[in-house]
Image (cartoon, rainbow over all chains, first blue to last red; front, side, top):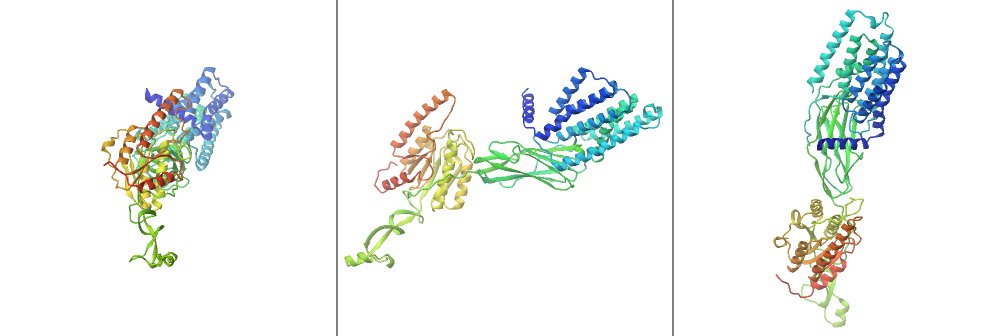
Length: 183
Length: 434
């Protein structure tokens, strides 16, 4: 009980010491989530009010504790909701949503680099800006590949699905080794 | 100081998020045949792949040390954290735990280092300053290094805080009156016996052994017999600073804030010691009820350093269980004892009176400022403090009735009047109970 109180106290203490840079980085979670949901709506999807409330609550939780699994839950919530309630067309809104998800991920990664009072060095921010550009370019390339694939990836045959599942399985095994072996 | 080894590199939440998030979305995309979800997964997938490719191999080691272990109030040093085998480190952060009377730059004690070019050794310095005399703990906290893409982190926690000894900055003090019982061989205090010196004693007839430059020609011509000018010898004196640290009144505010009675006591003791040591006298230190802060009587600049270090070891509240009958001060006759005490306990009064009865010259310096406010805002505490002051007046009367002068600390000139008076008394014969 006392440890929970101490952790709560530490959390509030940390929030009171937030640097301006940290506030901006953490604010990207609710802003980014809102952008993804807005783009989903623009893409023709349905965003229920209750889901909006859940997603924003989760995004606020991410902003409070960026160094936790809360952001993973937020990413999965937004992604799965898109898969369930957005039309399956590869439009420009999809690219926008993917870039918004990237923004949330990178901002929360930067926010969890150290204590709340930490102001990240300019060198590190520039490096991450370059990385963000590279990943955004890769995402745009993927979007272009999927969008302008001659026969459309969605109509690929069973062999293509099997190949994709095999690649996913290989990637899963690789990640399992990386994540589990080092914990 | 070698830091404790924490666990090895561990995946960060960001890396786990990139891996599991991308995996889940790719699975949904493949199983549901949704290429748009694959686009959503692609940025996380790219980040996960880049992070996995750049996973760290070397295991950094961390050492933390204080650049200086001893300094004066207000002076600064730095906690230096050195990372070795840091070729895979992209970012290092050091967060020092906050401690009272320790100031950091930046104020919260958090500093990071972003590595632009991979290096084997990294160094992070956090300037620290101690705002009050005493032993201060610094250097404990959290140290972490992060690999490329923020994918893996290694935390190391320095196990023990390092001790920073903060010497008090002596207050302003000056005394022109000589000490009453100079007993040494050399010094600046006029002795009671005639000898080589600069202070005039008398004009007397010439005796064998007198130096020619002492001949007083005017008197010799007038009287017809050879006369010389005699001087008094100059000797050094022994001073024992006796500190009563059993009570601390007032809220200490550090170097720039209000001073508690113990602050006044310690800084006054430093100032008195510095003054007399520079005059060539011998000074010692004793804290009532504690032996670790004691410094035997000695002379010289090194002695000043020893005394200041002894003062830095003073802890408030010591000496409450003091038994005056068992006290042994190890002082020789003729030593002047300067007792710095708020005189709030019967034990301090008894100790002071006992010293005076042993034939020592004792002066009590009172560090309690007349306008000291205790329990401001709480009427019950204010009433209790007024009652305590009345009791203190009774104790001070007991001290004074034993012939021990009590002077309030006011910096330069505090001891002048009382030392002159004691010097005159010392020249008179007196009865001492042994």
